[in-house]
Image: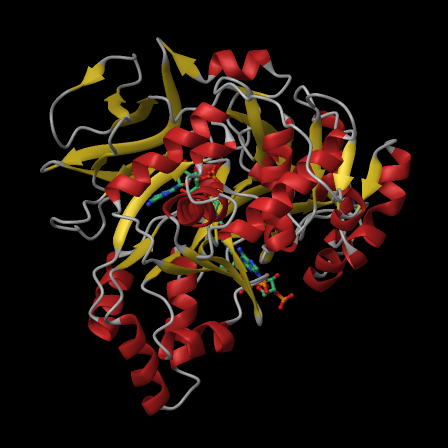
Length: 494
Ligand code: MCA
Ligand code: AMP
């Protein structure tokens, strides 16, 4: 994907690309700024040759400038979670061998110590922007473009590397399947270190020539006031956002609720994904707004894989069929292809949308593929022509608020608390968050532990959404004959 692949990002295009607060930026302005940023990054070199450049910037013009500037200059973009704890950042930056970090204002200040320690050059967007534009390198599609960190069944997140070709495929399948056009106007309030915010909303929007309204967080009053004004015609979110909107309706008067729902009603599309959308929520949303949520299934390693149709039945509790250009099949535990309906199997995916590799982790990359298929670890059935997700093969992966969390990563942090002798973390069903994090904790002799103290102690060691929402003190964790904690037994105690 060279930048020309985003057909609307061209000089002189006056169409509004981005809206940030009271400011509007045209495609032409954004394009020029990206070229200036890329020129500044190169600083006389002809190509960044896959230098890893991280950035710690919320959704904004500066974010778009940085991401595309790195791409145009031939680097690998490493967008970071601006809500990360320092310990998490240390892992991301070290494992990706990041050499430069872009951050502005207070964000920059918060990173100064860590960057100095890791010998990373810390710059702001303004520091980099060049006054004029030099020739930029030719980028072939197979070049590495982006690294996103994802949690898995190990205690450290892995860097998922996608190429320009991968990103191109992830975007274009959605442009077709969801009928994106220049007429579209969409709010972006999800974090921009994950596929949902980066590809499905921001990149599809910019590729299609649409207008993307940028928010640094999910600001319900501001966003709903734009919805009342009829600003948006497309809305994409994780199920927790729809739950939070419905909860918000309970706190405001009926007339206001009606206005917001009337703002949703004429939209051409409302999408839910990143976690299971409960049938109850699907029905509530339809009742309130008339919108039939389009649920789709994706993963950091594959972008979007399976989606309900835009123009045909959108079935509650189901994620639909493989997207154009994506192959999906179910396999049983012996790697046999499942062809019958209603037989559970692991979803495996092939296509240009699939990532290249886990960064610097050949073993994990090899283990995640079988016969060329990427193994998602998600279990599904085919039910009357539509895939239905049953759950995940690993109990150690939790989906909370749309974030994928590793139980082992959280356990690793909790175990360092001086009062804790053993710990097991599980996800428990939660109406708002989908799943919430619960920790079973065994204490050292004579030790005591209050939840609030543990919560405080976790601050700065992990992002707030990973901190257990509750703890249960237990005499001894249930273990099997091999000494392994039997988490299904813990689930029965909840
Ligand atoms: C936040 N809190 C939580 C959680 N998150 N409590 C329990 N479980 C959680 N998961 C608590 C905070 O600690 C805080 O508590 C209070 O809620 C408010 O926190 P805040 O961060 O302000 O919450 P929020 O703004 O309401 O955030 C909810 C959110 C956010 C907007 C839904 O979680 C979010 O943006 N989720 C989306 C993540 C996403 O984009 N995932 C896509 C990745 P206290 O007040 O006590 O301090 S998956 C993906 O990309 C794949 C490819 C796909 O398929 O899409
Ligand atoms: P992540 O690794 O953060 O990209 O999260 C990807 C995971 O989110 C998938 O492997 C699924 O477990 C889950 N997921 C995404 N979309 C859905 C959906 N519509 N229904 C159920 N689970 C989903």
